Image (tube, rainbow, N blue to C red; front, side, top):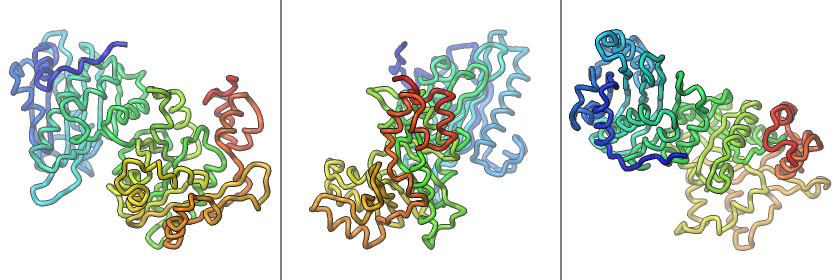
Length: 471
């Protein structure tokens, strides 16, 4: 595999595009100035690359150019801009430019730091380009969050990001992972977050967009990505905004009947909170990156299998690199002040109450719990029962063993409804162990099929997922 060249500066990337006389197009930017265009003009030779630059800040002017849209900083507006600008540049110039010209349109619609208020700073950015003269165009579209606290710095970051996208799309389109990785060049993870990316068009037909979005996490461009039940990547802020959120963490390899009951029972109790409207609850099945990584690599087939199986049960899936629960809570708090619920099995107490798990925190486990439960956050604890035992062997929040020095902490959290016992809908699934299920399915047909939803078992068998029948 070739190694991506990471030595080019922003100016070198812009100049490389400018010096290629066969790359020609428009750059239109709404919000945060015209920093992308400025970068290309600054390095020189831009006349060979840029046919037009434009901003349309007035909404009436913008609507007159691109048509009406309900939200000006949206994917819909971005696509209107790309449609209009690309069609226009080809129609006006295809007959006068060299036949080898590949046309493009870069567009951005963003809301940067306001002079008067500290608003959410985000935007939609994309490029539509021909990757062969006369070819149908391909798109790379993404959603970004600007993390700088200053308008000028946000504008600068957007300029660098735009150059990275244009250069990457033209020069690395055959290696889409490089396009993703190159977005952070000259920026780092502290200035820009990219929480959605989508490749489409004739030169990206083989691109698996779910893997590209997973690569955003691997490239430190975001800490989490979200997939809806249709397997489509969605913007976390749009999904979670002002909604109560219930999260079930697991490996889901595969999703089992105990997972289904755990989420259902947890949501039932979560919905009883006064501040929770059960019609607004967003339920997330969350997988941490460390459960997807084998050695230094992510097993793409394994990841896609888990996403597909969860989607078949109607779950919205979050992939994150938040190992500790309090960091997951902090991420969700960006978008909502409504209650947050986390449902987990009592079996996971070995991690939740393991002080080694919090090494590196100055306040240790107390700091971690202080950050997990500062407001409107509850952890719902689902019981467990060893296989082959009766109800008397059930382990619950009330009888789970924790280290002696932490018993008073457990009692405090229970007394203040921070830790809440979950009553199962169906206690016949409490014995299910995901490790046993995975080991069983790898031997082929067997008892494991009774431990997962019927549709999940059939899908595993038909598609030979998760190593089915390989032992």
